[in-house]
Amino acid sequence: MPSKRPTQRDVAERAGVSRGTVSMVLSGKTSERVPISQETIERVLQAAAQLGYAPNPVAQMLVRGQNNLIGVFTYEPTFPYDQSNVFFPYLSGIQAEAGRQGYNVLLFTDVQAQNENKIYRNSMNSLFLADGSIILGARPDRDELRRLTEEEYPFVYIGRREVSGFEINWVVSDYAATTAEAVRHLLELGHARFGFLTDTLDREAEQDKLAGARQGLGTAGDDLVVLSDVLDLPPEALIRQIRDRHLTALLCANSDVFEHVMPVLYRASIAVPGDVSVVCLIDAVPVPPAMLTPTHVQVKRPLIGQTALQMLIGFIEGTAQPPQQILVPGTFVIGETTGICRDASPRR
Image 1: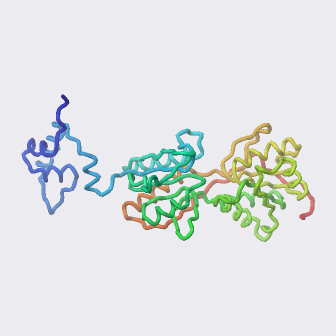
Image 2: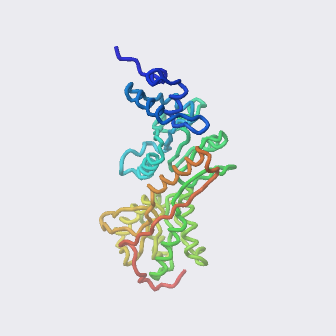
Image 3: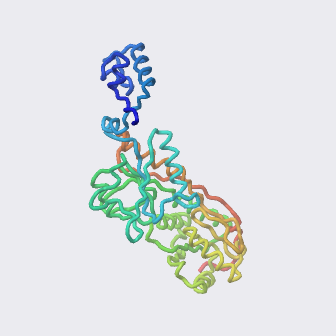
């Protein structure tokens, strides 16, 4: 039979002190109002070490009113365990900062019917196991976010998310600023006819990038050609749009669009960057067959995860008040897909 786990009573008996003294010593709550001699403190610590006493974590949670657990929940169909997953660097930043701040991370990974993640199951908030949570995912359930806000449950969303009637807490890359920087780079190269290519304008990130493109173009922003259904557009139709409108600079809103557009241009014998310069407004990798290093925006995902956790801990510990929104600067990286404009055609 395993030996009984030692208790504070056992430590008190071994040290010859009261249970209250043991509790104060082991919790570090000694003070001038309750003086305990150094000799007594050392005797209690020695007794605890001799008995192999370890505090009950559940009891400590009840005393503190919190359990030092940070939840991470994603609306994506799979949790970002794989380092190749675009959300993994956020998780890396969260875990590193949690360790520095003395918090543990609890991953909510339950996927139910129809491959859907839900916070509320049987009308219960599953995130209540944690003191507060960081939420990820491109397509959130906004009704759930509204309900969390109404319940005053502490959470921070990674990514700007609009919830009608509420201001929620979020941290996101400053897409508007980096897109404006990309546009200024292309203007300096002599480009004047721009296309903004995306698969949707429903997501806030794409809306922010479009706003940044118009900001960078200034008074010429109204002339920006916006193609919002690029992934559904037949390749010949995309090429026709580029040629008919004499576009020389293409802003790809995300990596899916960039990876779709580059081979289409290659097959149409449109040289990059000789005929058209292409920028991906998020992280991107070379695409076959050309395999050019993309000019792109580098999102500082670990820093965003770290910042989100710092904000959340502020809410949990009462040092900050919601709502808060933070824009984290990205880095514009010049690669091989942008060059001097060679097209002297007049603007349309």
